[in-house]
Length: 491
Image (cartoon, rainbow, N blue to C red):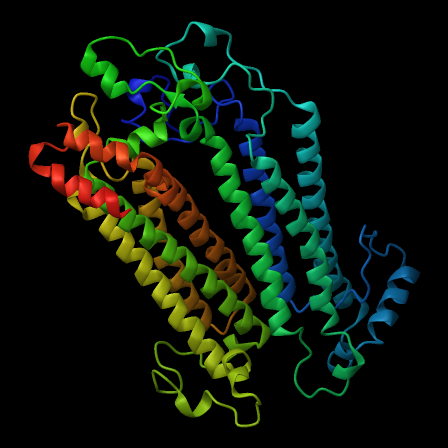
């Protein structure tokens, strides 16, 4: 892993990096804790996928908010098994013996306890960073003028940045609600109304999609918030412009917080945006739109996958790219018995699988397209130097790595999905495919976060300054003055 930049003049050559050392970033411990929690959530999603694939989700027929230990003695296991036999799924699995029941029970029990463990890790960490942990600022802070530590205010008393308490409260609420949604989902497969059902007993695909969607949403917010904490000094603490200081032939001046530094003081993130030429800024904005669109498609594909799982639609039409010899199996996509007709979109096997195929393909093509546009455009291949601001790249090293990872992950995920389908959805491939969707989502979120310098909130604050710099003969050159003002005025 490359060492983080330690001087303001080197920050642009390394892009806008996340700062993991606590000596450079007092909010780093919070960020690393949030990212660790997001990893636990991804593990919980994976375990949940295996629980569903092994048909273990209905093995526990009650729910206790604080959880309980599993049966231990032979008598306890027999009591639990008899309780399971009172519910509809037993009618279709009467060949199951006690050992087989223990197998599916442990998967469901492990999934639930994993959720509670994540809640304890998050709640305990939140309390720790709120009331106990206090950041230790570097001792050289008072004398440093050109180092990264020089941008840190002297009065930082908490690792939780301003405004982040509300995000942590939201995440805590999302996690707590997820447990309730999970039981709401399980109940859909336990009711007496399912007895005598000729179809395989499964939970409601609508509730399954809600449960998975909430888990993925929680993971995404955790990931974004963690990345935000790790980059907070770069994004929000004001700093002397290293380009200006280098051009003047002197050292950077003393800097302070935004409130004390005045209107002209900008963070390193804002300075990067200001120093982009209009064409580079426009390229970065278009790339960011493409990445955000890919994230949206990834989310829709994940939700459509939940309906594939909920309807067991992956075990039909196990050919690619054709379905029953057709690209679009029109005759199989509408069941006349389903009323209202829109239910076919979410309950008919052919339609559900076709939706997932199309969304997965669109996601892969979108990822490849935005990766190619971001990496191959001339504006994205420029290099940053302290003496030539006009060559500042529209894509930082973090963005370039993210785009490459996004395009690669999305292509691999689509390929894995096809292999899973052709092999009739074996558990190992199907579980890997679900986990792969989180890999694609992670790459997208990381890349979008790396492109935050092209976000509307940043551009709207520094846009007028960028236009003025061009008018005054800045890095854009005289021939670009009117074009620069026009571009900035539109963002």
